[in-house]
Every structure is written in structure tokens, then in C-alpha cells.
Amino acid sequence: MRIILLGPPGAGKGTQARILTEEYGIVHIAAGDLFRENIKNKTALGQQVEAILKAGTLVPDEITIKMIAARLDQPDCKNGFILDGFPRTVAQAEALEEMLKNKGIALDAAVQMAVDDEALVERVSGRFTCAVCGEGYHDTFKKPHAPDTCDKCGAQGKFTRRADDNAETVRTRLETYHSQTKPILPFYEERGLLKTVDGMAPMKDVTAAILALFGAKKASSQGVQAKKNG
Ligand code: ADP
Ligand code: ADP
Ligand code: ZN
Image (cartoon, rainbow, N blue to C red; front, top):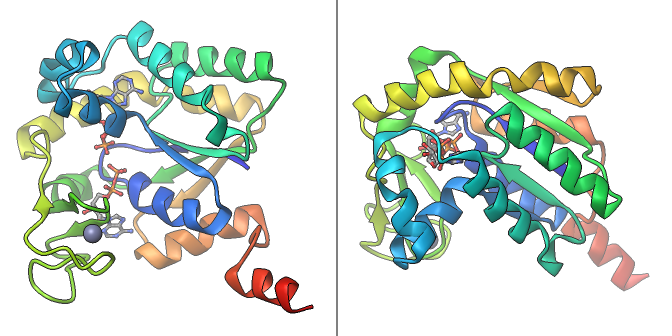
């Protein structure tokens, strides 16, 4: 399974990608996470892109494409992957097409998560993440069950907020999405790969809509259990 998740900042790409990763046993490749990892580790790439992420504009295609190409070369991508936040320009979409062609593989779908612009500032402003396991939360839409404690891994006091998740930068990122990323929708439409789900629905309904696009689960825990038993 090879899927692209397309949508503006706050559309729910990361949230759904994490669920699909567990569902299908494939890797989640988030361009923004890779950049942030490099910034945190103070690599040469990190130093090159730090100011760009802070401003909310796009990292140049050449740098981004090189980073993703290296990631797709890793052996863990062999079983499939979910690309979250890449491609974000037509040049990136073209480069991805070329990369996959050279590997002799194809995309299953590009899933567009359709959301209203007005909802996105609130989505992004209320976002926080567990620094230990990466689980995503929201001040209103997904609060942890116990205050300051991660539901998923139990870590306490480890929630972090992204430096670029403020109302002002979100507006820049939204403009960037409309001017530079939206033009890739026709690119995938022409190739018969574009699927659209309603990203305004509750999280679990969005998950169900995406799963419905791809049919039965690859290896549900029940299915695996049944196989082991019989
Ligand atoms: P969001 O979750 O809000 O969609 P991301 O974590 O995907 O944001 O991206 C954060 C930032 O990283 C972007 O604002 C941009 O500066 C940079 N970035 C991420 N993906 C790309 C890409 N494909 N091309 C260029 N820049 C990117
Ligand atoms: P993206 O990766 O597209 O930028 P995220 O998955 O990080 O978006 O979601 C942004 C914020 O909105 C997070 O705080 C997340 O918990 C919340 N969120 C995600 N999907 C939904 C949804 N369907 N309804 C309400 N809130 C959501
Ligand atoms: Zn956690």
C-alpha cells in the first residue's frame, strides 16, 4: 500500500497517518517531522531549513526532494508507506512520480482531506503532541484522559507544541497551501489517483472513510490471531 495524504495544515494528515500505519503495517513518512528532527539534532539540513519552517513558507524543492528520496530508499519502505506532507508542489509530485517509476512501483491513491479554512486556525492553534511517542492531541477535540498524561504511552509532563503552530504562521501556511500545493490536485486527478474524504467529520469517521477506500484491512489483529490458531 502506497498512499499520499494531501491537505492544508491541520487537516488531520498526521492523525490519520498514525492510525493507518498501525492498520496496514506500513511506514509513515512526514516531511515536516523529518525537517523538525534535523532541526532538533542541529544537522546541516536542520540549520538550512530552521528559519523557513519558522516563517511557514516551503523549503526549496531540491532540498525536500533529496530528503524524501533518501527516506524512500530505506528498506522499511518496501512494504509500503504513507506520505504525509509530501508532495507539496507540482515539481515535487513530478519528482515523486519519477522516483517511483525508477523503483518499478506505483501509488495506490492520493487522498485529499477536504476541510474548511476557517476551522484550520483553531485546529492548529490547539494542537499538541507527546514528545515521547508522537501521539497527537487537541485542546478541544482530543484531550488526554488524565491531565498532562499521554493516553498512548503514559508519559507525564511530556507534551510539546510546535513553534510554528501560532495563528499568524498558520495563515502564511494556508496561503502557501492554496498557491503552491492545491495545483497538485489536478495532477493526481488526471492520473485517476485522487480520492477525497471529508476532513471536517469526527476523527473516527475520517478514518472509516479512508479505510473504506482501500477495502479490508491488510492484517487486523483478529485476522492474524485466526491465522495463528488455525
Ligand atoms: P502541517 O502538519 O501543519 O501540515 P508539516 O509538519 O507537514 O505541517 O510541515 C511543517 C513545515 O515544514 C511547513 O510549513 C514547511 O515549512 C515545511 N515542509 C513540510 N513539508 C514540506 C514540503 N513537502 N515541501 C517544502 N516544505 C515542507
Ligand atoms: P495535519 O497533520 O494535517 O497538520 P493533525 O493531524 O496534526 O493535522 O491535526 C491537527 C489538529 O487537529 C490536532 O490537534 C488533531 O488532534 C486535531 N484533529 C485532527 N483531525 C481532527 C478531526 N477530524 N476533528 C477535529 N480535530 C481533529
Ligand atoms: Zn506518548
